[in-house]
Image (cartoon, one colour):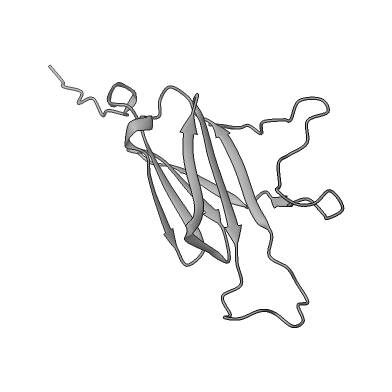
Length: 132
């Protein structure tokens, strides 16, 4: 699985829905750990401040994309803020070994866990050796 970020075409600006005088949305690349298991790959991404409703995970043309909007947990409008949460964006190019129809995702306390199972033919298989 290789990381892949889609670049904007020359002269193309991201659509933000804001006035041109305001700053555009910023995205951070969240830290990710990837583990190889006998069943497939497990990807863990740190997404602090992200709720399930603000997380979008999708696969399109063999590219796994997750995008999230972080929000402060405190109710009400902030009067003074010393730090600002930013949005997250990350993409990975999937190999043919990943069964894209069985990918599952869980979000627990700011950690996104993606299970990327292998297709049946690509699973590791232990072969018993017999002595004659």
